[in-house]
Amino acid sequence: MNGVPQRTGVGRIRLDSRFIKFLFVGGLNTLFGYGAFAFFLSLHVHYSLAALLSTLLGILFNFKTYGTLVFRNSDNRLLFKFLGVYGTTYLLAVSSIAVLKSFQMSAFIAGAILAVPMALISFLLNRRFVFKRISQDPGRTIPPATDDREARSMP
Image 1 (cartoon, rainbow, N blue to C red):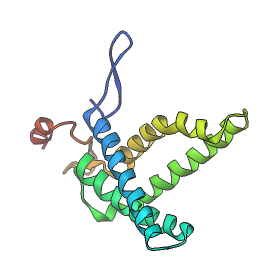
Image 2: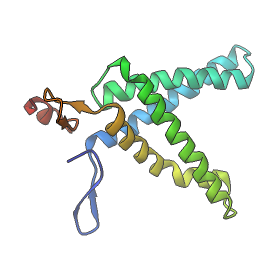
Image 3: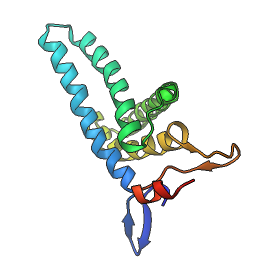
């Protein structure tokens, strides 16, 4: 399994455990980001600065939690690639909301509709471009392990 939803029968989809972890860690990251935002507001920081600071802290927190808990990679040198994926998914989400709004859809509904597809896109981009595993052979890429048994059996 490559980390993406896969069909296993008529209409049934089996999800990679890393994608499920990605969604749960995303929930944790959301709680952290909102907690930081609320903390800054409680210190009487202007909401715009509170949003900026909590977003910056959130990105760093997200990098560490996704890298460590989902992809088992804590290499800090990957931060700039992570920022690239973060920026790409942001631009894609905003432009997608704009398209849906052009069909008279509210931004609230558009954002809700896009939440899961954007999570999947973010997962796939992070898996492919940020947290990919490289083998000892420089010409061969090994996909990240899907579970502990597979991780132990990889060269």
